[in-house]
Amino acid sequence: MGIRSQIKKQEVIARANIVVVGFDQRMRVEIASIFKKLKWNNVKYVNGPAAFFQLDGSVPFDLVLVDEKLSEGGAVEFAKTLDRLHGMPIGLIGNIDNIVDTSVGYHPDEQFFAFSLPPAAISDEIADLVAAIMLPDKLTDPTGDLAYCKVHIDDFISGRQARFPLYVRLARGKYIKIAHSGDPIDLARLDSFRKKNVRYLYMKKMDFSKYVGFAMQLATGVSASTKIPQKKKVSFMRHLGEALVESCYFEGVKENFFQESAIYVESITSVLIDSDDVFKILNSLREASDRVFVHSAAVSLYSVVIAKHLGWDSPNVLFKIGTAGLLHDIGKKDFAREILNKDPNDLTHEERQVYETHTTRGMQELSRLHNVPAEIVQVVLEHHENCLGQGFPQGLKRDRIHPMARLIAVADEFCQAVMNQKPHEKHTAVEVIDRLYKTNLVLFDPAYFAVLMAVFKMEVPLKLKLHYEKGGLRGRKTAA
Image (cartoon, rainbow, N blue to C red; front, side):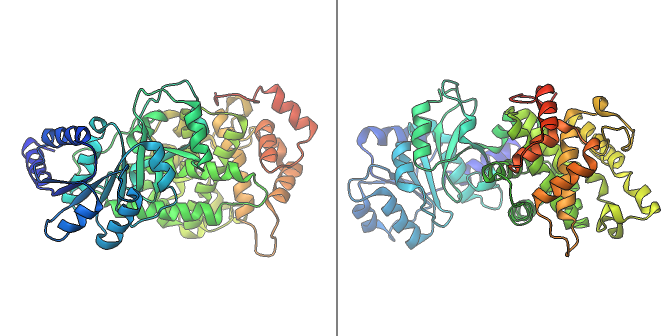
């Protein structure tokens, strides 16, 4: 944004009418200093709800900031009343733990926001909120769900510092910051959140991309007429979420692994599609064949499930595995529908020849994108190699295949076998795994296949357990 545009934006934002409800004199001074710095002059201070309702209607306002410690009735109840009467933005400011205690489970109409003390630390967040109010057609809402990615609370270890600001989600579209960058992560505090049924913490999307080691390089110089509308990406994410819940849950899987991995896949996809180039190829696959798109989502999910079960907790490794699973069939996006909608086992010889080009096509497609790591490109190329050296496109044997490609090959074959069953078959996931074990085990890395069986609570045969132990995979943190 140019200097003139910045100045014009600031001038528009500065016209916001704000009402501050509650707070002692010291806090009002601190809040006033923030507003002065932001050049906001249209601010009215009132002592509580009664005083607010006396001026309600006589003074225009765009945003109400409420003291969490209101003496005249509960602050959340007051916020609910404002939300019901006006359906306009309300910001609750105060002690994090108190706000979480009183607010979790409250689901207002996209208008309720929470900010943690001290006030000096919230100026940027309030500025973002006011910008979204005053310039709704110019900005992506920085406070909505699409701006955040979730991470399981157990991924944060006590004693470490928060590398990025962390948030708790109060309700749909409502977040409160619980830690600033550099703050220590306290075990007792994490436990208190767990007791309040807080299972996930959140990061802003760009912080999440740094957390997983993904250097997002967004397209530059894209004209407004060619830039992909945000609502199209929102629709894409909604479709992905529905696909994960409705089509990718297979009976028998450990439910906690499924839920956590599904959330992780949604988070990494949300980051990926911020790049218009990545969004275009993913969306083109969805438009070409919803069946292939749902399969790709399932492979991503179960690849992450396997990796988590192995104890691979590196955010960078999990991100690469999930992304490679999501993109592994991207080379099919330009195939004819009669090929896309067939089970690979039912293809004619000529169709099979075309089908087997998808790994090379995928590699070429992704190689043109500067923000896709080289390892992911390699995995997409190699996911149809097998341990006997009878796969394609290069006929590599086990030790020459990338470890992540060997893992994704197991998830790919499993998902294909479960999802492509004929209507009269109706085998459970456990029955499918048992059949693959008896007929095709020699094609797969036995260590990863053993983990797939464990994920579905199956008894792992001794010979697979030995491979699992020999490969040193138990508790291993990285894939290479």
